Image 1: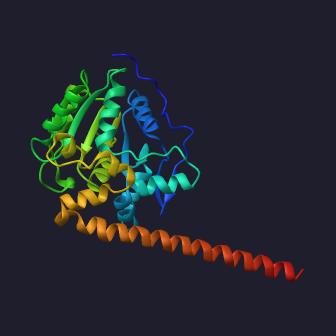
Image 2 (image 1 turned 60 degrees about the horizontal axis):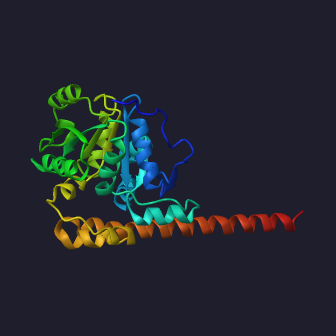
Image 3 (image 1 turned 120 degrees about the horizontal axis):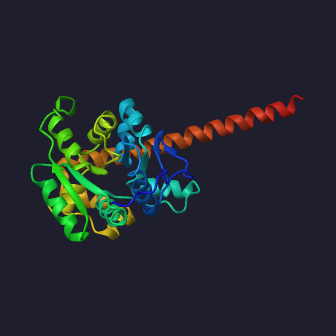
Length: 277
């Protein structure tokens, strides 16, 4: 295997916070290069795909926010976050979805011999996702797959997984457990599994495997992926998108109003001070 360049690849990218939730204003190319570079380093790094859902969830979950704060990289997996970051002066920011991230990293990883392992999804989904990736990216090294048990993550026995990871020695562990479960799991297991990089990609395994339809690229990058997913799975996702998106907008508006109020109060105080000198 060729030596993977060391360094984190994101030295010059300062993390931003949206509603207190950390996210890096990266392009797709930067997000890919950061993973490839980090894959040649010490184990323990993980990457979170941050969207409006996890941002809202983190408002009531200190554990989730701490998990993302400790992540090596938090990429914007949602056009609202990308738009906000662009308005803050990061024009190169792009939405990075799991269904795109996996093959992009796989293609770039061909140059340095990256080995991949898929963990997550219902039984058989990881196998199908890995098989499809091998069709999309000829020569990619998928060295193993695994499905978690149907239980709370704290009750999972990981002995078999750890043994398989030790045997196959992947550089990248793709984790498809859904948010916020995967973020909390990666934060807890980062120092236990001996993997250079774990990446939580949610439902991307289902899309890659073809068990669920993925939103067309045009909708994804126009900001309407949520509407497509809601139409496909209304009973499962209506609360996340209808209530969650509304909550996200309300929290942004409240933050803006509070900021304006503080700004006006500061101006009033400065004006009062000027008049009493």
